[in-house]
Length: 294
Length: 293
Ligand SMILES: Nc1ncnc2c1ncn2[C@@H]1O[C@H](COP(=O)(O)OP(=O)(O)O)[C@@H](O)[C@H]1O
Ligand SMILES: [Mg+2]
Image 1 (cartoon, rainbow over the protein chains, first blue to last red):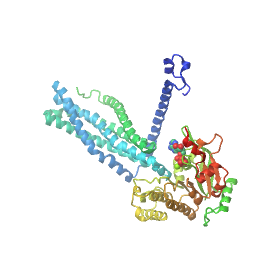
Image 2: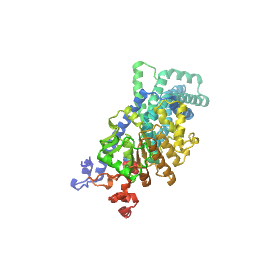
Image 3: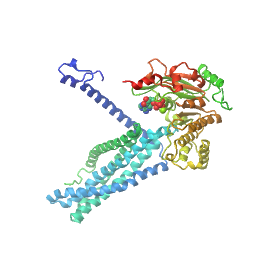
Image 4: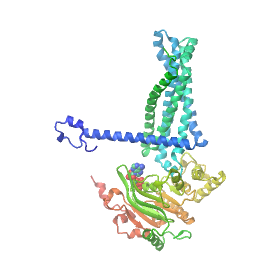
């Protein structure tokens, strides 16, 4: 890579021989190469890390006393903020959709739209985002501090496996608690949407619910919760991986925490898209003439 | 040579030292080797830290590894317990290469080690008592009372009262934390104890307390110890052999990285300027680097 002449440098310079060895085009190419190498090795490292975590999960289930504190952190302490944001999202959906639906004379369809979006998309993504921000970065900062202060090395030096001790309980906590959080976000969103549509905008209550019932089925609820399991695993694994591979010093810990959030958020949206496509196909396969909104 | 520490031999009695160090290098086949490092290379990416190290540590020896900061002493210790994988070469504990071990074998081998970390590395989510109990819970099926008894006696051994057991590490002073780290490392009576700068950052009195603890451990049973330090006082007091590492960046391609290997009494007689400067604490020609560029 270091000696290959950059094509872009050759194009801009009239005389290729006059291009200096360290021209900007050359650096650019070398940087890109380094970036690709880094990205590949990071993805490989993450895959190995995840594989080892799953292997440990399969070999030995962690003891209760290492699990409960994580369940409490991830589940109980996240409930209030998830409930609050869920309520607001439900209301915001009502505010945003009302004008357009009224113009079509379909106000009562609002229930279907709000509840469908909540249960399928916004509930899971919102709960996952809150969890990534609240729990994922905290995991990464905590494990990063343990890495920097050699506590992870200490664990290994005493014949304890750091992945089994630190990562598996966190992964389990996220996996088990995220469905609860999603259902909480869904529920509060439905309540918020109902409150704004029926109580404030005065939409007919009976039709609001009838429309919801007609269009939102168990499969929608299931698909939201199903997707959230993948989001939960992503949050825990990315947070722990970034913590384990934290650079030295306070700055390293801070960067690990930020990166954990950004990476898991991007991955959550990517997974949401892929799983959405997959679940759509599954739905169409099981119920070829299933009910659609319009 | 079977058990040189069963009686109370002062570690720096000169004649004894010279004999022991001589024996290790000349007839390594005859002595009981606990740890052997063969042609060890460690590099992080392009940055080489250790190059071609060979070291034979007989059972019962207390070896001090000295050298300036950044020369790779901690990296050497971590490689010796398998926390860092060598890029080339081997680390053999009790005749078996660490790199060839399965995870399970490595775990059971590490139980025979004790590691005292530079900043103690106590788990700050646990109390002091839980920290010292950790290896006991991990590797033995003692009852809770037995473990508690053992924890308190370990703490007493390092001069800490039972009242520190329920405290969190953050509430302790640096010297106390170091001693808790020592108590934790010694909880399972390890065969080999690795100390990473045990006295760095401590006041002179606390440093001497730590030196005393290292020596007492050795007198109480035939433990092998490797003490990484740049404190010459510690090296002279506790070690029966000293090895000095030199930073690779300051060496030519073919120069060996170990620039001194012998009993502490030989340190002052070394003809190597780099050794005598380190021992006396003189910057020498390094002063010129200050005005450089
Ligand atoms: N995990 C690591 N990744 C990259 N470089 C490292 C790592 N650990 C140590 N080093 C580098 O190795 C060199 C030796 O470090 P170390 O063994 O900690 O020195 P010391 O002799 O002071 O203990 C340093 O230059 C350090 O930057
Ligand atoms: Mg060090």
